[in-house]
Image (tube, rainbow, N blue to C red; front, side, top):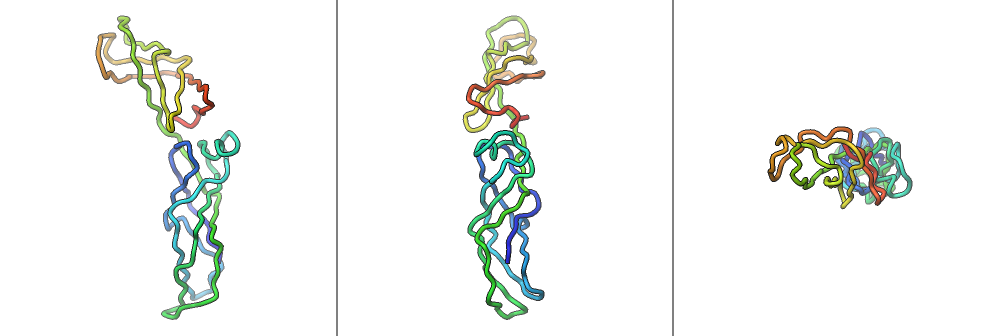
Length: 178
């Protein structure tokens, strides 16, 4: 019997290669007609290829993209029956794979402190943009606007952040974020 991963296995970008599966993500082939083979359906595994994502190696595997190979290990047969009778003789590889992985973009977080300047516009160098796993970005251009018309205030949300261009000295890819 061969177990494969099917459907679409999706997660939001988190900088890692871990994957989560549901029982519906497994398909079995090679089962003889009339027999019912049940497997343990492991719920976790890993992404193992870049698919359409940029980069190479572990970084490329973790980047946003589609068509990624995924792998579950520890697959085992839990029962094989025909009617009420146990069926013997089935074997299975402990690994299931499929090219059904997708990693999607997630939102960035922007914070900052702007000295009073009489406007509602933030200076780019005063904005800290953070992603996942400690990834940070510098805003090199764009316009961030607060809704307070330049008044002194704390915990003021940005009303707009138009055309930001992000730079990361650490090699983090801004393309992994919305």
